[in-house]
Amino acid sequence: MVDYSTNTSHTHFNKALFLDRDGVIVNYVPYLSKPEQVKLPSGAGEALRQWQDAGYLLIIITNQAGVGRGYYSLQDVEKVHCYIQQQYSYFGVFFTDIFVCPHRPDDKCFCRKPSPEMLINASNKHHIVLSQSFFIGDAFSDLEAAIRANCKPILVLTGRGLETVKKLAQYPIQIKVFKELFETVKLIN
Ligand SMILES: [Mg+2]
Ligand SMILES: [Zn+2]
Figure 1: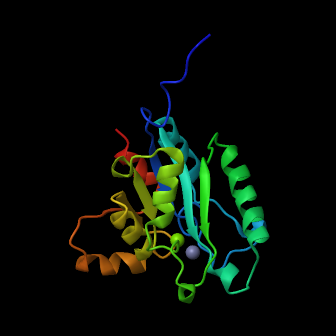
Figure 2 (figure 1 turned 90 degrees about the vertical axis):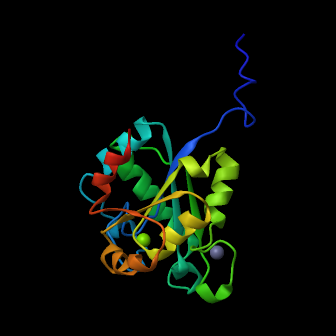
């Protein structure tokens, strides 16, 4: 009998690639709520497969204020996520977990990005070392959440990325910028 008991949370740690959803792993559509609106960016499946093969857990971190605003339900979000998972599964890509903040900004919840809360919860749940992990996003709130969680921020210029990159000059820390998700595989060593 093999004893796996050393492979526990006390001794085994993971690294993760955290991913924003809209404008990063699916093409940006404001308040996307239906599977038929989901389109993967070109090269995204292959890119995430490479990150996964390099040993990164893939975890989606998404704000869905459309739920809190009553535009769509959490069940709609789950249907969209099932569809996204199915589309990526054709590339052999598996998402370890998906964290959703369904609140509106004025709900003053603890989870909504730029809060690092969802990253910290993911880290506790899956034994992730945040300083060894990346967070790819297209919005300023993604970068800020990453920085506050001590996780490495990456900006892609898809989705709202072109607007976000203009604000970067104000930030004291250096942030890696890539035109598209596919190009981020350059960071895998
Ligand atoms: Mg986004
Ligand atoms: Zn929230």
